[in-house]
Amino acid sequence: MARSAALFSLVLAGPAAGGVLAGSWGNDVGCAGLKVGYQDSDAYIVLTAEGIETYGSGCRFAQQLKPVLGEQSLISTCSAEGEAGTTVETVVVTNKGEDGFFITIPGLEEIGPLQSCL
Image 1: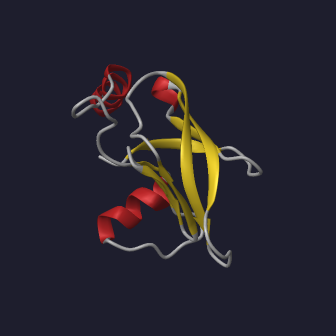
Image 2: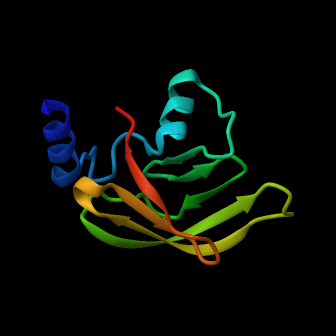
């Protein structure tokens, strides 16, 4: 219960260093991959202030993600395994507080929830 309360206050208060999202946020597989230092599953998803990374793809944000509730639309440079070059996409990151972060990338299903990888 204390961990849940601490996580809830961390998400709502906006973990920040200089006004940007602090730490890494992911699904269970993504957070586990961060702890061991490598990714070995297609289910790997990690969000930071700089971008979103999955097993075979990722997007780098043009500006850093801020720790605020609600939606942020971020111009991003994205790449995918098996695709030549990069594309510019508008990635929507939604902070739903206790429910975590959700990511929307054009043409893909919503990704989430992503929780703190404390």
